[in-house]
Amino acid sequence: MAMPDPENIFEHHDHRQCRHEAMRQVSDSCARQHLRLTPLRARVLEILLESHRAMGAYEILERLREEGQAGQPPTVYRALEFLVTHGFVHRLERLNAFMACCHVNRGTDKRHEPLFLICNSCRKVAEAPLGVLGRKIDRQAGAMGFVAQSRVVEVLGLCPACRGELENG
Amino acid sequence: MAMPDPENIFEHHDHRQCRHEAMRQVSDSCARQHLRLTPLRARVLEILLESHRAMGAYEILERLREEGQAGQPPTVYRALEFLVTHGFVHRLERLNAFMACCHVNRGTDKRHEPLFLICNSCRKVAEAPLGVLGRKIDRQAGAMGFVAQSRVVEVLGLCPACRGELENG
DNA sequence: TTCCGTATTGTTACTTTATAACATTTAATC
DNA sequence: GATTAAATGTTATAAAGTAACAATACGGAA
Ligand SMILES: [Zn+2]
Ligand SMILES: [Zn+2]
Ligand SMILES: [Zn+2]
Ligand SMILES: [Zn+2]
Image 1 (tube, rainbow over the protein chains, first blue to last red):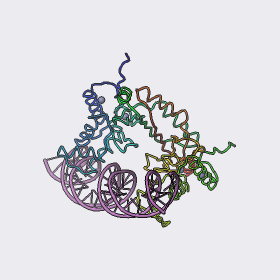
Image 2: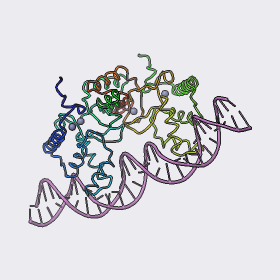
Image 3: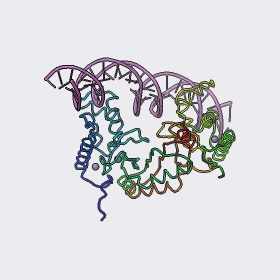
Image 4: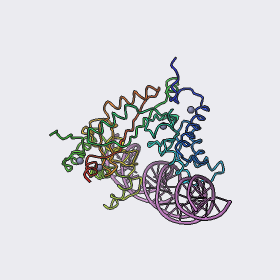
């Protein structure tokens, strides 16, 4: 029996703890960097942290409105811009949607570019370190005389649970 | 002096020939597969082949209208859907835009998933084979129990020409 | 504390990208 | 030529994102 990978959200984990730890790390990181995690920004992050799924900006907006908070699109987009800029939230290009960062070093690391695993069936999204792949991609680009500045790597497929459901009927 | 890479559109090449060859290959491929490359579909592909840049659907629509062709968004989106489905055109997720396929085996290959190099300065887009990187990405996904079905790999940066301009003023 | 400048949020209006639904035309098959 | 499916035309609308400016809250200097 392998140790659970703390970064693999497809494995069983205490998600309450997972969320709580994420908020704490982001909060600490903001304090260290003198960034203002305002109530609005914090609330948007909390909404994203409720699940390991990507949410559209308008979906988040809807949630804020239900809670009575004022809500026009720019409100949400600005909060998301802050969170994405500082690496606390990632944007998924393929989905035009956003997800909270799941990296164990979120906050200490500078903004990172992971590999995203997007389940076509349940819409869960996991984040894996790009690691050496990032450098290999840059090298491939460099072979054509291209200087890489940023990368988008998103894989669509089936998460373990959904794959299991298909196999077992 | 290295031989020019036939797939590297950042290098000097006879683009008239490049375009012509692409149309011929796509046309042949459609004939072999009993696909209908209608005048509209062919025209959309030609427009995309005029440059190695990505174009938005509405930009293409504008071009069609200038030529007197009827034009509403679904017209263009349907032509693009056909071209993308059969691998003659690629969609760039990061740009919400489309570009003609530049792969030398376009038409013979089944739909492929390349690595895209997007110049932040001049907006040119090159297509490189993902090659072994695709398998490495799948393996990284597999390590988390995920079954990869499709991949998005886009690199943003500076093409050789734009990098040169920056360096030389 | 009060004042001031800046960062954040509120608000209105709008742009860009994409699709649903149904009518009409075109083309392949019999 | 009639039948049927594929492709295109057309109208309307959804979904995603942003520009511009007003109002407010906040952090530091006086
Ligand atoms: Zn969790
Ligand atoms: Zn992350
Ligand atoms: Zn060319
Ligand atoms: Zn360039």
